[in-house]
Length: 358
Image (cartoon, rainbow, N blue to C red; front, side, top):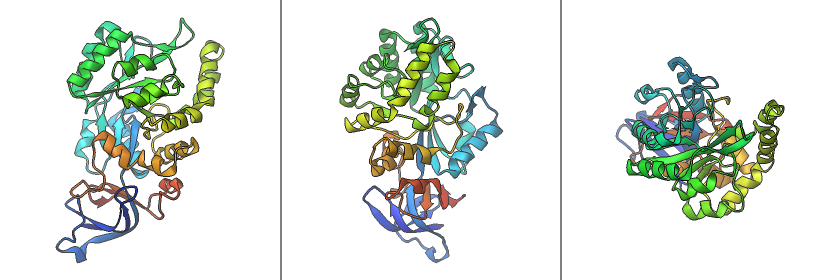
């Protein structure tokens, strides 16, 4: 039995003085035997959400279980207790049996065009096979499928769309028929209209949003996960490819330069924005606090940026927060994170399934 005393942030404006964790579940009723409970004190938030993370993956491809465990532990120690794994070639189902590791919502393995993505990451296929592979990953995942919407086309020397409109429409319809939502990696502008009009549910990165496509996203309620801590790498990527692909390099720099304006314009238009770090490829794990700070730097109000990794993100993913009867997954801080999101970088206690584990 655990008692959390101080300020429990059940919602942005709903604060309670304490909660109890009994058999791993939250209750706000004082339970029998409460006098013997372990007590932790501070400001409590629902376990943070990283809505774009890759456990079981590094820059070279799939990793062994020991490495995947270290990745998950790093995320946990940063306060990330719920992960939407946005594509991984590794089978990480064994994590579901570990009560000391974050909970994961999987999107199966990336689906990309042949030779149009990072080697060893994705199913690399042609458009005629897209529906079949989307159906396969919809059945393997936890309610999500991940497409690679654009990537560098070596012949064009720049980012181009990966899929014809007709195949995208059929694939998204099939995923929806099977009860899965669809998201897509998209850096550039070209693929966005077709994907949104085809019924996609979310776009990752979304650096290619413009004044033409932002109203379309808002009208359709398509969410974005900007991964600004990853977009920060664009200048180095551009420098590395400039000699061979100067057009692509210039494009990447343009997307980087307007990144904050893009995110703020999306938020101002009413597009749902959520926190994701893109950890697990070339980026380290445990960067969730940094991504929240980046959203604030882009101009999103601090409380909304906080919700994008807490209450709002959990609601979007269909997982509970600090409701009565929910799993007791929470993070305790020394100060109010609503007043300063930098507080997220220093958790005092990590509580997972009702146990203090960090």
